[in-house]
Length: 336
Image 1 (spheres, rainbow, N blue to C red):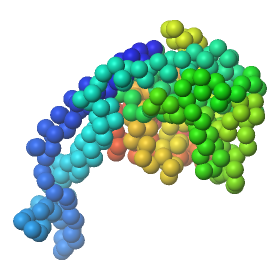
Image 2 (cartoon, rainbow, N blue to C red):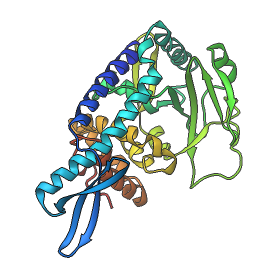
Image 3 (cartoon, helix red, strand yellow):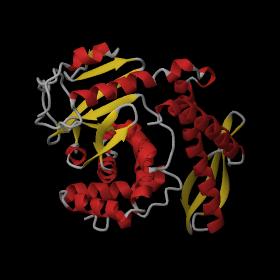
């Protein structure tokens, strides 16, 4: 598990990405597109600042292919601006001008955490590493396309009912340098060394009223997340050097779950990241017939409403992930 490379790779990626975005912005038309209906159809104008005010520059008919190309370039500028802001935020988080041993030391607590969990038998009991660090394992062990990790959250899914060993998580994590924090809804998270650990449980129905019950065997209250059983019912195990064997969702389950949750209102800020991960993992899946078959099997066993949400999600993915080039009709032949 190449945890040590995460920070350096992320910094170099975003520095290079920022340069490319700035270069593209320099040659992109400034302004936004306005549509106006007139006799003969719809016409497009470039709306841009002029002095203390604004002006609308006529481009031509919306149906004109050359006008469409200009409009696409102008719309692309808005995307470039959003991505540049995101890159700058990531660099700020990574402290680009202070990349040093201080950031590398984040890897120590993470390694110790996984070793402790493996030692207690948590992974054998059905607990899985999920989220972005799960995606990092896919990159290092299964050859999934690389792009940098953007989160300091470490997520674990717990099956309910939980049938594993009884352990006081607060005491264990305190020894590793994490403090227990209570959320407003009664759930518990753990923070320390710049990392945040969240334990998640399947959420049933559209939601649960009131506070969530304590998982007494682990002395914690996991955060409920919809559709989590998809991950818990389809797992793989990998052996990590100096850590041991850990459990995580299969790549087909990970992909379908991401497509389902990406449309949730509470995932709005993470949607683009979710879709980037879906695209990267899907590129690997379509090269392996066994993985494609697993996608079909999991998908076929889902309720029709879930299949529809996944299909709708797959259709809008290309709008947020440029150059994805994954034909989801191969993976999702029947989206009804």
